[in-house]
Image (cartoon, rainbow over all chains, first blue to last red; front, side, top):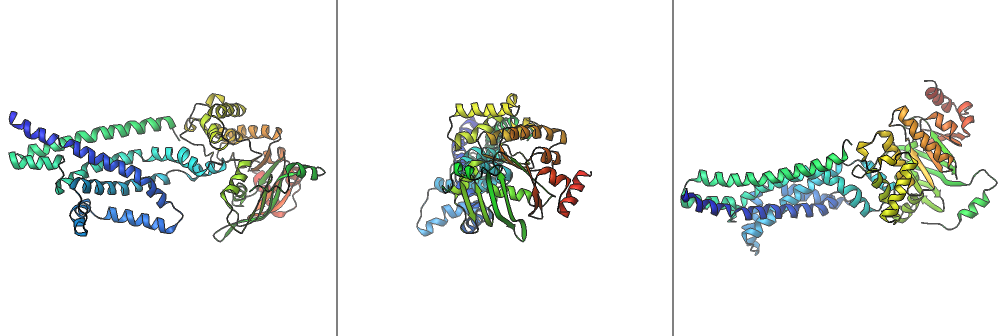
Length: 217
Length: 269
């Protein structure tokens, strides 16, 4: 049994990196998707076009390809990024595009009457956005955002390919040193599973809380 | 834009001879959606302290017209005067400040209630008072409570809209509009989404408002209300006003053939 303690401990220490990349990217996405949503709903065609181009390009190219571009590719134009920075930028960009699409879908779930009522009450734009739209958008998108965070958690495994010492990278390293890849990777897999559980639980808790208050709408 | 050319006092003294001075005057308002002329050169006045009902078949442009009055739809052309504010359409887009000035005078009640589902009844009524009128939370909530009492729903203050019946939601919506101290209340088919029995409780609240001399413009299919509560009935067909006048006259002896047709269809059921 002692034989396993060292390698498994080494793998488990990758949890911090995986969590940091996942939640770092999630926060980047959750925040940057807001200005992107404003672009998507702009009255200027050019801005809306830019939005759709961004989302289409980011989502149309595999994450692994973006990761390689951000790490290997950019060195050719004189930009040298360390693996963690490349990983963060890539995952953050993908999270931003996905969150923006989630927000955009969520906005469509809010009836036009909500804006009309806000207008009729003379609420200005910022009050309408802050007090009327944002809380309803939050309610509409919270389950999809949680799903997206779990997706990011799993996608983060790709960063092992550019040498970021996350769970998978470390499991690979230990397999090379100790053999027995089944145990090493199964252990890494269990940690992913364990990480995704609280995200899902939190999401269900938040959603249940806010929808219970509204009761039947 | 507040046009100080006519103070309200002067306006009233000028029109003292007539019944009541118009609080709102629309002149040749026109609104087109694509090829469709939803509102076609509509002119009408809403006298201060009186109730004006707009009736007519579905698709006649009644709702589009009333939505033009607080600029939820911006008319393509025509003129609008509400209180001391005057707007001319057809040239430059109205500025946001001009739109806000008009909306500050008017309260609106929608067919679909449009309450904010994430806020309690009390907060629904208090929010805009705080954000727009700058009232403190305490003052806004006190006044909200008073308005909820007025519509008979003080006990629902802590409930969310989803926990209230349709009729209760509409009464909360009325309280929400009243809390902004409007000079004119616009009702866009306030009972159409409700069972007749529930609609009656809304009409009761509206009758009380009329008795308090609130200036009201009501788009409605409630012929009893139009006849017995309003001071004036306006008949709209195909985007245009075809007839207007005293309720009894319009109801019992309409001049226009299309009005007769409409009335016999709705009353003959």
